[in-house]
Amino acid sequence: MRVGLLIIVAAAPLASCGSGSTPSGETQTEPRSAVPTGPQKAVLEAHTVGDPTRPEVVGITNLPDGASLGVTLSRTQIGFTTDADATVSGGRFHFPPLTKDGGPLPPGSYRLDVSTPMARFQPPDVLALVGNEYSNYTGPRRMDPYGFGHTIEVETTYKVPGEMSADAVRKEQQRRYAELGQWARKSCAEIETPSIRASCLAETMKGVRDTMGIK
Image (cartoon, rainbow, N blue to C red; front, side):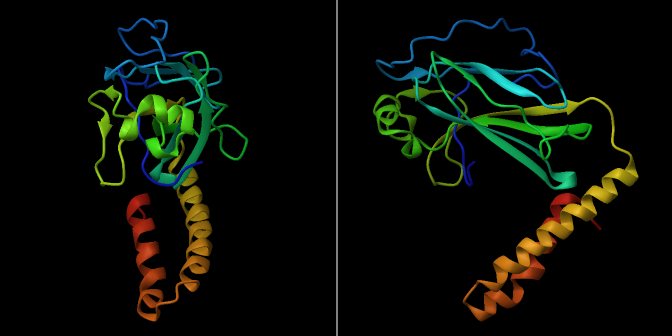
C-alpha cells in the first residue's frame, strides 16, 4: 500500500475492539460537507465491522470524494503487518477485510492505524480541495514529525479474541525472522557502497530482533 508517513485529520479515535464496535460514548453522525470553504476541523470517524478475525474498517469523513485513505494493522511481536486502501465516496469509506495471508488473524493485540497519504500524493482534484499539506483542515492529529509532509492519523489497539500460546508465538517469530532475513540479504547485497554493504545485514537483523523482542 504505502511506505512512509501517513496523514489523518481526526475528530475522534477509532474503536479499540472487535466486530461492530464504535468509539466509546460517541454516536456516529452523517459526514459534513466534503467541499471545504476555509480551514475546518477534519472529521474522520471509524469503527470495525464483521468477523473480528477478519475485521473491516468503515467510517465517515469530511474529506472530499475521491480522497485516498489507508489502513495498517501491525503486531511487532510476530513481525506482522497488513494493509489496505480505500477511496472516500459520499463522505464514507470501507476497507476490505484485514487478514493474515487471506486467513484469520492470530488472536492477540494489534496496532490499527487509519490515515491519508501526504497531500501531494492525493489525486490532483482532491489536492485542490484539501490544500497543500492539508492546509484547508485543522485538528490535533495533523502532524509532520519527520519533516516529510503533513499527515493526519488516528491509531488504536485492536484485539482479536483469544490468545496465542508461547510456543505459537515463538514459532511465528522464527518463521517471520527467517523471511525477513532472506529479504535483508537480498536488499543488502544490492548496496553499492562496500562499507555500508558490509554492516547492512547485521544491523538490519539486529533491528528486527529488537523490534520483535527476540533475545
